[in-house]
Length: 74
Image (tube, rainbow, N blue to C red; front, side):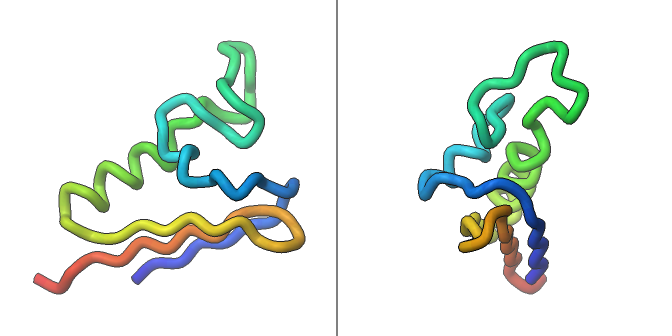
């Protein structure tokens, strides 16, 4: 299992939508957004899915996100 947690703004309870490509915390990203393109969690979700793992996204009470990816043993 891999767990990554960060701080930041409060996120809605619908954080599961963040695995959709080009979607970030405040909605669709613009081409001029230097902070990223909203592909990171979409890539993680694809990798976890291909390996038949589980991915959970949980908003932190004080802001930010905790992501847990678990993969079955091979």
